[in-house]
Amino acid sequence: MAGSWKVHFLSLHDLHKPQYKVGDLLKHAKHTLWRDEFDPDLRNMVIEITSGQLTFTTRPFHVPRGQAALAEVDEVLFVPAPRKALVARLLRQHKHHSDALVGEVLIPLVPATRLKLDLKRDNRFEGSLTLSIKPALQRPDGSHAAGNPAAHGTVGRCLEGAALLSRAVLRICGRGGSDGRSS
Image (cartoon, rainbow, N blue to C red):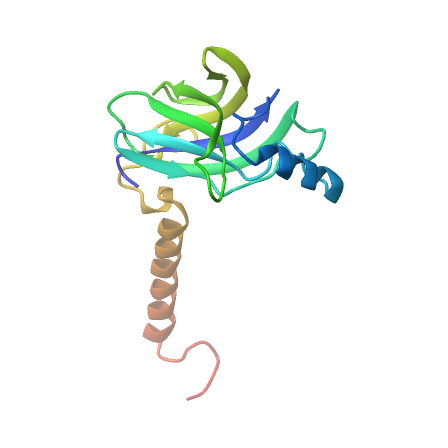
């Protein structure tokens, strides 16, 4: 993960409808009659992020009915360190047509714990995206993790735990059975 950035998508605010695609009216009517808990216009949503020539996408999600004003997302993507700003796009996926754009935004490459950025389509406000962005290998105090393997996430902590365990086994075996058990 060295040389990459962690982008944590937190929530979406004040979402508008995506671009119209052929067949959307029929799908809207079907999902309205189906009466499940999801908004018929905001189903099969993904957040796509572009870093240079590479594109990364979150898992598809649905926005619950009545939650277009504030929808929790909680998705994380790790992207290679770009040379310029990242581009984030909120899309509605379609099976047989191209994806419908809700809005897009340029993400500045400034580490931030919480950014609220406006999604726009054709220079019109279509909602907001709240996210945090920082280099992938960074300690909570803001310094980078360099030589400490435990600072490199779960794998580093597992390796450190394995080293402690092997030292404990060597210490017990080196005693020659003095732990009270007979051989």
